[in-house]
Amino acid sequence: MKRIILIALVLITGAVANQSFAQKKANQVVCFTSDMDCTDCEKALTEHLKFEKGVKDLKVDHASNTILIEFKEGKNTAEGFVKAIVKKGYKAEKITAEEYKEIVEHSQEHGHDHGTEVHRERK
Image (tube, rainbow, N blue to C red; front, side, top):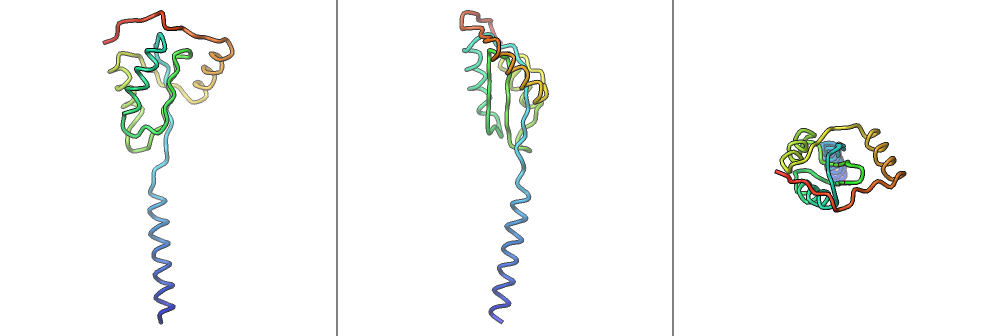
């Protein structure tokens, strides 16, 4: 009898653990192009976006004017990140992961760098 109760307890525990694991939401990735001018813009956006809800990974690059955000599904949305970027005074146009990859590769191939000498007034 003890053996049956023990087996039932193990099965129930396993089922509950499996169910809670299945309920964990996957991370989402969203990419944008923006209008950063310099490394200071890159730093400002990085500092601003890293505190947005759900952010797990963040890549902001002024040379390619791209932003890649990996975030926890259900904690934020692409539209939420657009609002956060615009609030900081930058443009945000959503692009696909393939477009992001092409833009970054093109920027690296041609050594694009806008330097720190150009600054625009932000809101």
